Amino acid sequence: MSDKKKRPSKKFVRSIIVFIIISAVVQLAALAFMTPQGLGAIYPYVLHMRSEEINTGDAGIGEYFSLHSEIEDAGLVILSVDTDVKDSYILAADYLRFLVKFINVSNVALYIQQMRVKSISDAAVAGDYVSFDKACDSQRELKVLCDQIYSFASSVYTMNSRLSPDKKIGMVGIKGHSKLNDIKSSLTADLYIIPGGSTGDHLEVLDAKTNEEYAALFRKHEEKLKEVLGNKFDYHNERCAFVEENAIEENFALRNLARYAPAGEKTVFAVLPEELLGNNSVFVKKAEEIYGKVVVCNTVYYDCVTLDDDKAEASRNDGDYPGFFDGIRIAEAKKLEGFRRYYKKIVNSFSSDELDGRMDLIGDTGEKTFFIISGSGPVTYNEDLSEETGTVGTVNVAPG
Image (cartoon, rainbow, N blue to C red; front, side, top):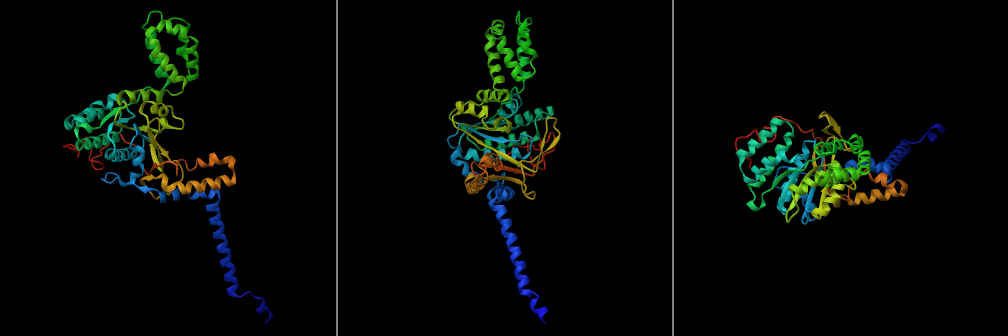
């Protein structure tokens, strides 16, 4: 009888179990919402829930409307993408459809060579589909451009078919030199056709292996090079300045952009590789001097496949993201600014010395609007896209 009195009642045991469970839940919630590590773990889900899906190809523009005030008076609007991910071009076409509803777009700049796109652009502006189709097929045979470039060009053709003559959109290619060898080859060619240029100590500049070494040797022999090159010196001196900036690719791309899509009353839209547009980008900084207001909209990638330098498939994943969500989304700054403030507050309360590093986890979230691409494959070359897109090379009539 005394043993029964000492034995805990079932109700008491249940209370203890409930208390333990509640305590565990509270502790987990505290870890999730009151520590940098916890907030970092739930961030991908917050990002998904507070971003909005973009239904590409429809006539709607509601998803992009938060960008309306930003792009209204911009001279240059840039979409920063991984140019080897397929859905980057689907996003670019859809974003352009939004832009033309609010601003006059003069040209679309793509990171390809101008000679690859000129005839395609001319036909798209003229509304000559026979020439457009022929120009695309001619480039396809060379297997230099990915299939998605032609799909994008087809979208521009369609848009032009619905625009008045004074609002037609051209396409330009702005890819130029990107490596030191390009600079050295150009200098070599000029030195060896100029009397006295092919002999002398100044030729050691051609043996440079790095940007720093080239710039140092060019400056070392500057007076001799000026004497030998004559009126061609300024040309090579400018290119040496590009090397000194360690921004060969950025400077050549900007020169081509300003040449083929000059600043004016209309806005230029550029779809560019993200490598040109990082923090303190020379390209963006100098573009602002030419185009005035420059708007850059970034793109992040989750569970995607891109291509490496050898055109082999490579994984592209900018962080954790719910793997069961694919597609294209827009993360509006206004909808996520509350999370950013809270995250910054929590991070700062734990260790202010690590604030900047920990803020990198969420990037532009809550500060700038950006795009999300999830679950996309890589761009393709010479693949039959008839079922997927019904674009150039697969149809017998003009798109649109």
